[in-house]
Image (tube, rainbow, N blue to C red; front, side, top):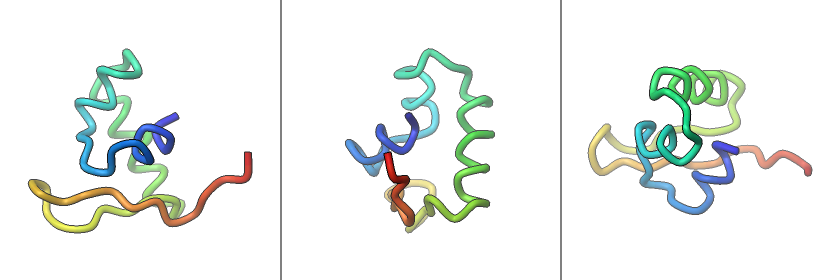
Length: 60
């Protein structure tokens, strides 16, 4: 679901994702870390003004 949200808004923050999913920010950060480590997403640019890129699309 995080990847779907990033597809809609690549500039979204972890806190905004957490609000949409009704999760804690920390929980979302852990999931984002897993996605980054598995190579599915990456962050381009800095913390402010940067954006997410989806590297590998899951076959759904």
